[in-house]
Length: 256
Image 1 (cartoon, rainbow, N blue to C red):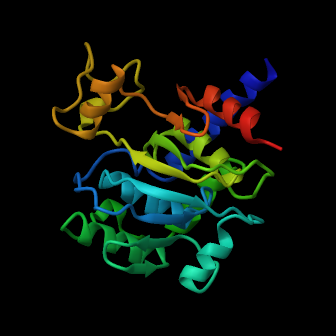
Image 2 (cartoon, one colour; image 1 turned 120 degrees about the vertical axis):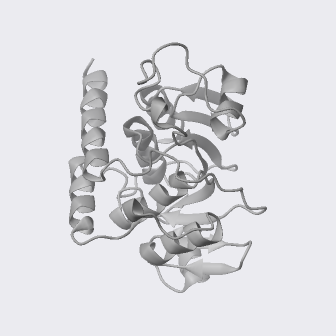
């Protein structure tokens, strides 16, 4: 009972985080073609600068391999320093163009230019005071996803279907970051305004059908619904929806 209540409180806090971020990272601006080699993002879930980069990945419908680097982490921080020269986050590695870059603004400009073929949309440009709103968003979620928690290591990266602005998906990403569990982030942003709203009651009434030929349509064809978060763990064979179930699973399977 207490765990269920705590989860409900966490969801409300996560809604506040998305609100402070003006709900960026929900709607796809321009679907980009996935690069041949996966990009890698060394990331802290609760970091406002990292959040801005993940918002851009959702806006472009791009997937990315996440290497969580929470404060106090020992798994990927050294690797990030070796590749980039310092422990600063976000750090993007793009093996398709041999780019290694810090600075969220630079990364966002690169993603929209390289993979979107366009300038950064005004909604995603850095604005005065944006960091303060981002910091308030992190604080509203009690800074979850900032500091490391002891956890088991995994042989294979997990897979998470998510989009940045989803309050429910954020709860799962926070836990993955705290446990330093690497995962492929499959962005499944909303492809049309009629898709806004939770999976059980979107703005457009009637049975839900995603835009034909898109990533959401492919997900729908496989699972019979489009709902995030959705987790697949190749280390155990587990596949599941629902944020609370996923967080409970991660804590049971990997917490030390």
